Length: 334
Image 1 (cartoon, rainbow, N blue to C red):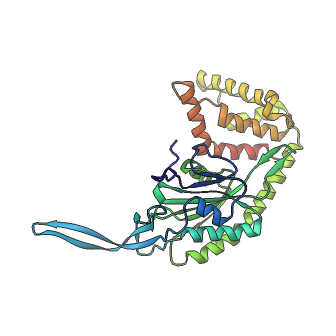
Image 2: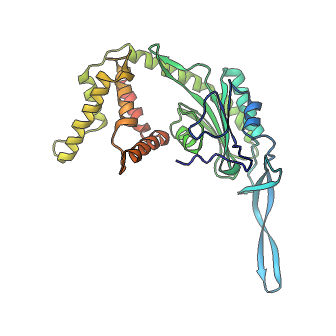
Image 3: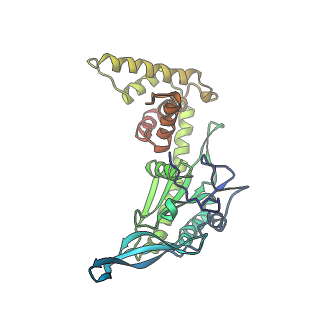
């Protein structure tokens, strides 16, 4: 699982994290929350001055070489944060307008002032071609007094024309390229801004639109609280499992064996797992048993235990079970 965090020749990396180290162990971990300016400085995102340069091609002829301008296309470039030299990042069309890292941070800073969220991570990927900044919501969702669900606001920008400026609300803490993809895939709410002349105005619109995401957090919290207050029997959980993984009478014996093993694992989590302590016998426990099975227990391909463990980690990071979990939430909520 490649992290794709930008690393420099002086041994540093373009990544900053508040309080907690990332799995790749790169960058700087701060003691406490960061401001936008601190996140930008520590992650080496300041002063890039992303700009457009004329794009030329070179034609080789018997008389030598001839430079040719490529019309309607430009190279995006930045000032390298360590060397100060110009570095090209990508090729874009004539309607492309860069969104500077400072504008990226300014947008989030304004949002943080209103929401009370704090800056959590910041980083550069693919040698400056992509940038991310994330904030942690001011309060995690506490379910049943001891089950916390964190939500993050993450903003992603590209400087190579590969993607738009995107803002998402997600339960994924972004620390690398894999978790960025997982955050986008599992986003509860998102807003996309193209790199055009009116991008700044649309970022302001996104700021207003993302006010709806705070209501999402409240609604999710309320739904989860209802689930923890509602009992769930083993039979009710079995009905949910049968709907999530249907098996017909005429299916092969292997499918029926898988069905029995799956139910054995899920029912064991529901009735005995330490992760269900304090919520056992509730619909919230049923949902958590399904989540734990799908992400951590369900069979994974691999020749060795280590390979299987890597496959399960990839499954969590990639958000492969997200669609299943959304259906599971709908079936277990009240």
